[in-house]
Every structure is written in structure tokens, then in C-alpha cells.
Image (tube, rainbow, N blue to C red; front, side):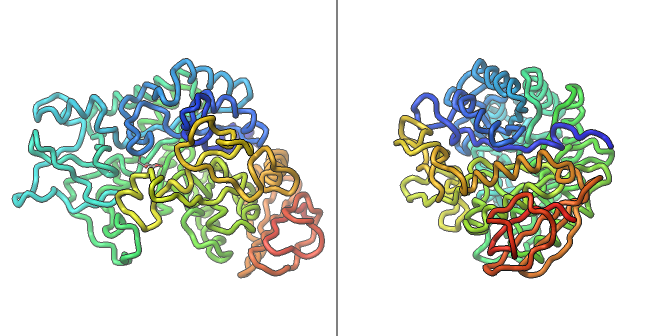
Length: 513
Ligand code: GLC
């Protein structure tokens, strides 16, 4: 049997740098702070640290609006800090992934400043400019991810530019070969500096095809939904050229042995699996967001898991995620009582899991008072629950003022989980369970590579098997509030006491007889 690569065996841990650890008292996390906490990540048993953007940015979208792809925002530190972080991670056997944001820059990026300076500027075509319609309205009816139209009018040059997200995040024109060359070279720059790969942001929006015109109405849309879903993004998202762009990125990645591309691939199952590439020349790991969106019931989860497993290309390695900096906290979504169960599902399915910082602690969505709201999405589309501040709160390291996160005033309030801050979490806490779960997973071949098989799926209980070469591991998850019959086998780990019938919300891992 072939060996698994580091990214097939490893667990990805997402660090949201603003909220991980502050080292200089400004209330915002930074690179030196991450270095201080690498031992925590290592002790947890994760292997791969993905860090959300750390590049110079006006922070209109908290770093996802980049004004210099090769710099480090002074808020986070310097190149020297970055080099120290890579060295400190590698010394501990941890890999580091940076966030790469190809689909748009900040409007403060010098390229855009040039592009908007005149219609004749050589960089005009680096972005997507179009004339108004005869009545002055925007070129298409497209709606941006964060609310209003995707088109912003530029008074000076008398044209609209495209922005899929905020107006301060103009879309790059990847059909321009100079843009391709520059962006691909940026990847080389960071590879040469030692990064082990990239999480590629918003790739599905990198090749909008304006010539295809208006988007059709979404027949399923209703008033309570996210306004950006009122139209089907038939011409802006997952266009054929997207897959060519990914191939270009992969070719560059192959210039540097042993590196990884993890794509933010949101779409239908067919679209997501297409990102592996026709010849496995796309992303090694196209994110599989299925578990983030679906109803948290056994029948729906089983269908979702089985459909994904069946749709994977023959050589496609699976990947799973249940939380990130854009989505409701898993412990809030499924309920605190089922936080351990959810982590068990994430860590026992076949494929590379990603843990969002704090989910290992059972952190729940925070209440953000109106005067503390930071997220532009909440500001543009208020009151619909779209704001992402509640899931971006700083890590609660200890019981001191500032929670060990900062000596200053944290940029968002710290959310302390029910089991208390990290320093007070002992036996019986969520993180104590997750530590054992990760140790078991990483030490059990059947959990790392064994095939997935549904054993029992009722409304209350999901039991699945991981069939390894020499043993079968059973994972029994009781979704109900009642005890349920347990499968027979030797209990290896349980979120409860692990004997007799399954307790309400219990997750139990067994070696089958
Ligand atoms: C991705 C990021 C999100 C950001 C958006 C625009 O979806 O995860 O946080 O707002 O891209 O860059």
C-alpha cells in the first residue's frame, strides 16, 4: 500500500490571525503571537497550519482585500517575523499554508490605482471595465456576494468596474496574460520563502464571463435568504476558464516539490470534484463544504457523505470541514451537547479534515453588540444573520483580562467557551476529548485510509465503518436525546463513559469484533 502524503495524513488547523494571539498589545493578533502558540497547535495533534491573509491591506474585508501580495501588513509583523514563523513551524514538524487571494485586489492596490487612472493606462485591462448600458445602468444585473450590484461606477474614466465582493475589492482580469504571470510569480515568491502551500480564496469567482450577460432569477429564492442568492450566478461562478486558472497554479506548484493547493471550491458536487482537474492536475484538495451547509440530521448527512464519496475521482483524496471564519460555529449549529459528536464525524471520515481555530474548544457564536460590529457584510446587509464577527472572536487562552490573547483591548470581544478558557480545560472538556480523538485517528491506520461504509442510519443513530487492511473501526454517533443500542466491539474512545447503550449525543469509536 502506498504511503500517504503529509497532506493526506495531516490535519489542517485554520488560524484566523487577527484573533489567534496578540504579541504587541494592539488588540489584534500577529505573527509573533502565532509563533508563541505553535506548541498549542502541535500538542493538539494538528499538522498543517493554514493562516488567513497577513498581507498589506486596508482591512475593508479583514485582509481579503490585498494591496501588496508580497508584503506583510505591519499590523501582523514583518518578513523577518514571517521567516521566523516558517522556521519555528518547520522545526516542530508543522507545515504552513498561506491564503492566496487571486480573484480580486484591494482598490488601494497600485495596480488598481493605475488601472482606474485612465482608459489608456497599460494596466487598464488588469481589471474588468465595461461601459454603462445606454440608460446608464450597469452592464449586467449581477449581485455581489455582499449585497448590492457587482458594478461600481468610476466617475473619472466613465466606466463601470466589476467587483464580486465589496466595491473596494475590484475583480482581477485573469484573461490578461500579464495578470496571470504576475499572480503566478507571487506564488513562486512565497514558495521560495518556504510556504508549504496555499489555500486559494474565492477561486470560483476568478473568471466571471461578463459577455454572457444577465443572470437568471433563482426560482427558490425568498425574502429571508441572502440577497446575493436572488439570482443564479450562472455566468460569474465556476466558469470553464476557472479550471484553466487552477491548472496554471498547479503547474507553478509542481515547480516546488511537495507543496499543496487547497481550493475554496464552492459549488455543485460536479463543480467541486472538477477542481481536482481532468488529469488530477487541479487542486490536490478542493474544499468540500457539504457538511457546512446541510441539515444536521442523520438521513441528510448520510446522503451527503455517500454522494461525495461516490463522486470523487478515482485518485481524488477526500477532504472535510465543519467550520471556518465565514460560517456559524459548529457548536452553535449543532448544539453544545453535540459538539464532540460533530468533531468525531469530522475526524473519522476518510480524508483530510480542517479544524477552524476554537472549534476544538467548543466555542459558540458570540453576541456582538451593534456598536462593536466590524464585518462589512453585516454592515451592508444588516440583521439577516450574515455577519461573521460572531465566529471571529479572539482565542480565550486564560482567565486574565484580555484572556491571554492581548494585553490591550481586543478588536472583537473574546468568547469564552462553556468549559472555560484553554488554561482551565481539564478532563471532560471538549478539547480534552478532541486531543484523544486526534491521537487515536493519527495512530490508527484504518481511520487514516480505510474505506468508508455506512452500517446503520436511522433518524437517531449513524454508525459507519472504516475498513482497514487488518481491522474495522466502527464510529457510532447518537444524534438523539435518548439512549440507543450500541454496536458490539471494543470501545477505543467515547465522548461519554463508553459502556452499555449509547448515551444521548454520545460519540463512540470501537474496534469491531
Ligand atoms: C472568501 C473568504 C471570505 C472573504 C471572501 C472575499 O470567501 O473566505 O472571508 O470575505 O473570500 O475575499
